[in-house]
Image (cartoon, rainbow, N blue to C red; front, side, top):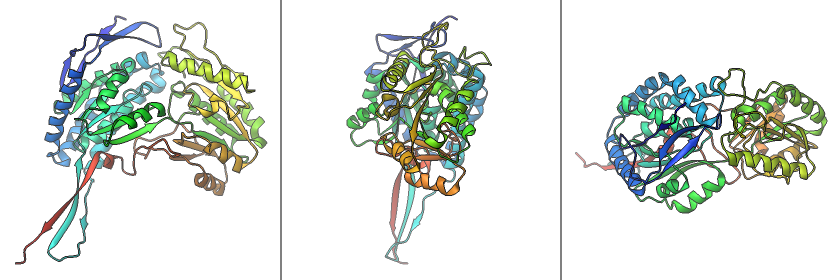
Length: 479
């Protein structure tokens, strides 16, 4: 296919910007040059921030029902473009078109539908006062201008996790996706135009870390939404000052297989969590902690379940796993597998890049047994198609191993004992504990956050994260 020239979306207009350079992007699927996107300048960023401030000043005075109607228009128009944009997503990101990309794009639009319903029920409260002549109540107000710095693994869905509830509550956004996965998102910006989103309420400026830093430190940006690595998150926190933030940073979630577990179901869940999006998910199968009594049976079941994984062309309906998205991720997989093997782990399947594909980003589905705790495969987020198996003597040791990580996003436990399931939920430090399902589970409306020190995420009510609580006090005269 012929490469396309993309534009930035700023203040409701398509523009080549005022920068003097551009990114040339190649597909992880085919290796072909698929698009060129301009590099934004500081002037482009300033223009987007100014437009966002104007837009949020307008929308803060809209009623909740007006903003809800806008979100519902976006949702309706979004669904008309799902299959078209899913093809772009597959080409630039690598996930299987039929098995993953279509649902990915469709679900991304659902955040507007959910936000439209939630904002109509976003209420304040009347607060009792100590004096008869006073009345006190609270109102939810928009925070203002958000910079949403989002990752390449879900380049449409994750930005909409911010934009959906944020727009419904009257906020504006400058979204910065990575330059190498921005085409599908920019294509969906046409929906915002058609739906009548105020110019400047949603701006999209792809780019590398320099664009993100310019937004994080910009005086006109009120809040930061970030999803990505914990290392980048730490840098953002150190630079953003007193801005509001929502930070979701990395995961190394364990899947624990207790002695009474359904071993076959646990193995299938572990394999799914490793091959979905080629393991490039923050809640993927990053560590499997198996009690030694069921270790051999689990390994056998895992190898059997792995036989169903089909690595290949993501546009082929028979494919269940496409390529990794980028070379740094593939190099990290190489490094983690080599380190684990050097420290005594046993590579039972895969463990290397696949041959005979258009790019070197196709990675064999991998199963590694007897993974040492001090290996990179155990300590860090691998972000690739690997099932790393660790062994524990008992439940107490399994929980201790699970907690020896600073990346406590999601965990899973397989057990048929209800009391044991609750025991694990009480003892594992993770934002979500899933019983008898993959770590790779989420719903669009569930709270999604972390524990263990480095992650924060969506609060109890996601939509409230995008508001400030204002208290209004009336002093009334006696009649």
